[in-house]
Length: 174
Image (cartoon, rainbow, N blue to C red):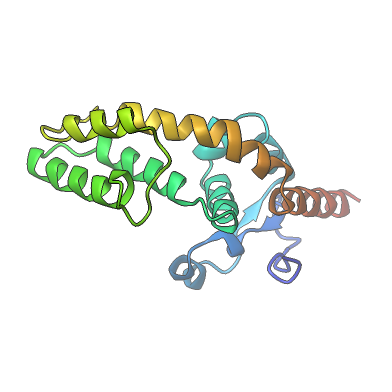
């Protein structure tokens, strides 16, 4: 992490390089993204704040990958995209894709949900609406909020990022 956070610059009020949390394609086009210590600190205030911040979301995704549970955030994000679809044909296609990838018992990235929720979701997706995935999405969100999020806040990824932004900001203010 030290080498990846080595892009600190005195030219910005922000405090830490965040390129390590970007997907490779974005990493090539973005040399050095900055974060303030206040921004990173706010992620610990609530799960919603973390998810609403693109860098917080990226850090959380990175953390979940280390825990081999990134299917949860990927499913949640797929549901967020699904809700924006207006075309019934596209909605049906996206619903089927989400079901096959995350909900089906044989899904390659199966999320951990109970049998009843799985069956109800399957039935709702026979005639999908923008709200067809709300219940299952809420369950996965709750699981992440109660389980993964507290571990993320205690994780080395978050603590290192918090410490490095704090140290950098202190150096800048001297």
